Image (tube, rainbow, N blue to C red; front, top):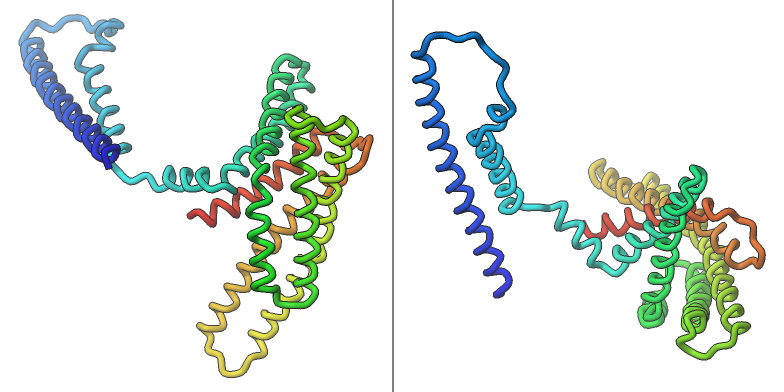
Length: 311
């Protein structure tokens, strides 16, 4: 509460400064009008171009500052829904991760563009940033097993609609339960935080990606089953008896929203698939710029979902 009060006092102080600026401008404008009257009574002279000092007179500078002060006052005092939305987005765990994911993968594209232009020093600096962000994102996933355990419990308490989806959930959750510890072993060993052998670190790195690749492949099966259910919902709406037009339109809009979400998930999965294969295969020749493009598209699509969820 003390912080909020301090912020309000700051805004009030800004308002006082703005009022002082208004008074100063009024006085300056009155003085300028008086000078104009005196000049008008003098003998006409040959007009000359205004000097640099005249162009930037104190009155004009003060008036410019007055406009800036008023603009800042409105920005600070008025509501800022977009800024509030950005803060909600970045404050959420998923939004925070998606911001850095976009940074991680888009910088790979920037590295490629700079290398094409023979700007090697700049390219190396951006590559360093990309690697640091990638390392940071792995580090913050060290706590990933806790929410994963919670989701496994939720999936068992509230099973999916069909038997196929229920078993898909179980298998996919198992792959992630294997993925997380292996990634933790890889990161902790690669940074020599825990005394894992180089062979163990290499094994954990590849197999964590392989379990992720299995998850992504199964996600295509899941998306196919979900699309079948969505089509069934739409068909049921059209064939149902005793339903008015408004109710039908509302239910169709809800189904259309599900289709849009499904398409987004399909796009994300399609972008992840080549990446998981690339990281699962030793000696893969998949270009790094393609990794950047696929990762950026997946990150933007996921960030869009989080942005809507935090509206």
